[in-house]
Length: 253
Ligand code: NDP
Image (tube, rainbow, N blue to C red; front, side, top):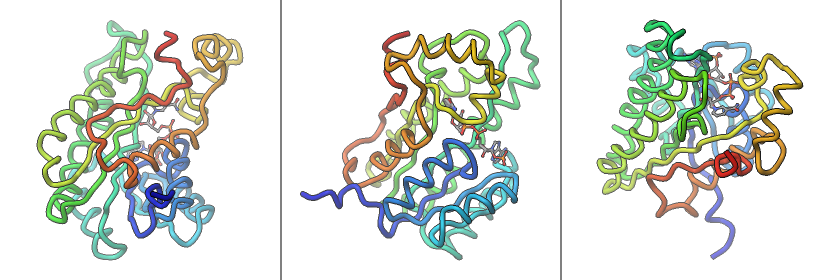
């Protein structure tokens, strides 16, 4: 068997939050592997720039993932105008720093709404089409913060742990229809979200580096490469996994 099992030729991938950071890293890797990508996000100028960089196999749709009513329209629009969505990457997410005693209900709810409830709604909508076609790969972008307790990220950590539960539940429902569901749990990846979370503080960066077994941060392309593998035919018997891509940070913790 040749390397063509890793190809994403003729596959259409919807990547939420695909205009920046990890989402854009995934989009670049997908396009390189032959896929057509559709990126979503709330900022049109960001998406336009990303699509211009990615070339003719990239499209965008402006969409706020928390706007539940818009989800069926978004999916239908892509299915009709671009083609069947075979890969869904639930990447859009927001970070929130705060200890439990300092976190207001409203903030906790906002994190769950974006990082979990929207993911469920979009996944269910895309799966409607995938289950009928008996073909699909769904990837959740979780986090190392969802694998074990990290201080000061109570809401964010809870939201990312919930994605593991969602993967487990969906595998029991979707597997006989050949729709696979997996998650990637990135460690510390250099993106704006990460740099903002540590206020671009060099000292904090060094402290974190010391906790990473490989002694350096990950790049968005590292997540992109893992996503290509998980959504390709090479992974056709892999469903229900949460794959840490973290330079050994989880093991070293
Ligand atoms: P970014 O802030 O660059 O990416 C987040 C993306 O999500 C943006 O493109 C943003 O676009 C989009 N987004 C946020 N809210 C919404 C919304 N309501 N509707 C639509 N799109 C939305 O950060 P990262 O690339 O780092 O994060 C990507 C994912 O990776 C997140 O789920 C994050 O939790 C996860 N992750 C990141 C890690 C890291 O170290 N960087 C580590 C572990 C996990 P816009 O604002 O235009 O809507």
